[in-house]
Length: 190
Length: 190
Image (cartoon, rainbow over all chains, first blue to last red; front, side, top):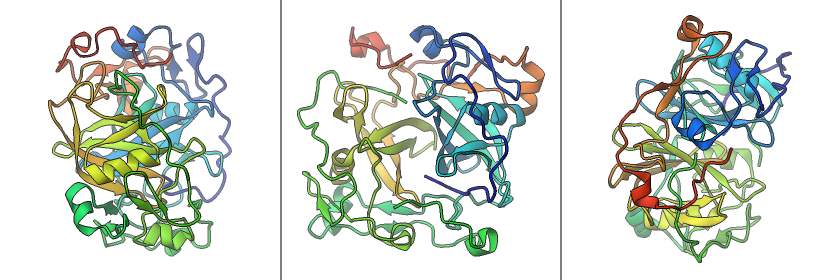
């Protein structure tokens, strides 16, 4: 997914130097991550020892803290995760622009973190957020997920030669993308 | 993410032949995907035209349809997505085992899909599911996300030299992993 992108490169786009440190490592914003030493430590312990992939990124799932709605799915590098923890506001890493991205810097739709959770093997972050203005999607909808695919019996009842149409679950845009982003390039890649 | 893995390889582990087809493509299980032709089509149209990454995978976010709780984050290849749509039961692709994976085949905790949504640029799937037995995490918890990281003011109030401890949000396992998986290898990778 990609939601709202910054209009200008953030100068603080250097990746945290150690993807998966062998000893405790401090981010530029003063948050320390622990090295990953055992499955028991990672799954059952209280150490924050996140796993970053080959690109230095960790997957992030962001839901609305009140409604439970899935707003977006993005990525953080280590510095984005550290800043989110330090500030309580969601920071991501934009893969298309390769920059650290303080969500809402352009659009004003800052995500305030109510709860930040980590999964069993610590390779995924769940953010439960409040969104000022209530929009998270660059197309203009509240959530990036505004269309559903019929499944199971409904698929069987509506398919034509294996094809079904998407069904809108949200038809009302909360902002006009042109007003907010002007002629900035669309982040969607075909 | 990794939640419950199959105990044996599924014979149907061949990836759907075309990652991002240039013309309508039919999966083995009879679900058709459309080629990605324009941003307007992908973002604002009713065509199901999912984007698979270099590995042939699409990111999946799975939440409990009743509580809104995030249960797990995983991946599908094209055939897993097609089978999920066709059957109404969640299928994933296990990266560690490189096999198609019908969730619950080993554990019995099948995920019945209440709603399958796709995001703006169609590179992420959101599954809203009912889980039989109520468990999705191989460690034994209901959700893979059973620990939180203090953020913002709470981080500032509790950090010691940049370090904070994870805080448990769920302390009760709903099953004993040894009973369910025996001595199968743990999927967590350090």
